[in-house]
Amino acid sequence: DAGITQSPRHKVTETGTPVTLRCHQTENHRYMYWYRQDPGHGLRLIHYSYGVKDTDKGEVSDGYSVSRSKTEDFLLTLESATSSQTSVYFCATGTSGTRDEQFFGPGTRLTVL
Amino acid sequence: GESVGLHLPTLSVQEGDNSIINCAYSNSASDYFIWYKQESGKGPQFIIDIRSNMDKRQGQRVTVLLNKTVKHLSLQIAATQPGDSAVYFCAETLNNAGNMLTFGGGTRLMVKP
Image 1 (tube, rainbow over the protein chains, first blue to last red):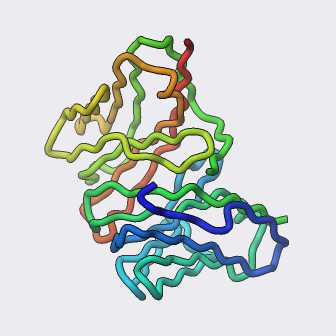
Image 2: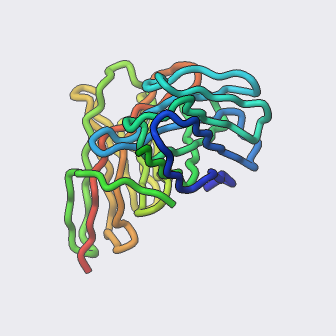
């Protein structure tokens, strides 16, 4: 898993509560990504980061924000969780911004009731 | 790790046979493609990649074929083993900043002993 950990691994929360998921990497990779995985949709990019304090939106960014204050940590925040955000969330890292593989973490299962 | 119970197309093969998993990609401008393997409870794992200036690339027991004319990608696994049982995703990217990958819906490979 290229030294990628995600926390928590499982979370159950209620609609309207804030939730923060953490991704931590030990590989010093410049690029970090947050994906969600849902039945029928495969993996979809939420946000990504191309350096400390540098982030950009992905395909499904509405309702999510991210922050990256250190190379090794990338946080995903749901400001007010909704049931549609029930999903499995994967963090990934990459060394290059173009044409290169991404390394994935083990995932976090989030359930919003 | 985590996985998602996806309702996926399924390919069932006998151990020792060759497997071919197909993928139709969406963007004719995509210039880099990756195959990932996702085992139950884990994050996606890189298998092989190919750039658009190639039509074939071989790895250990795996071959990726790219047909840009019909926007089709295939993954061939030789002498399929029980450990190959997993969900396989293709992903494409444009030559854009951030290396944003767009994933296909996935195919479940089941290997019968």
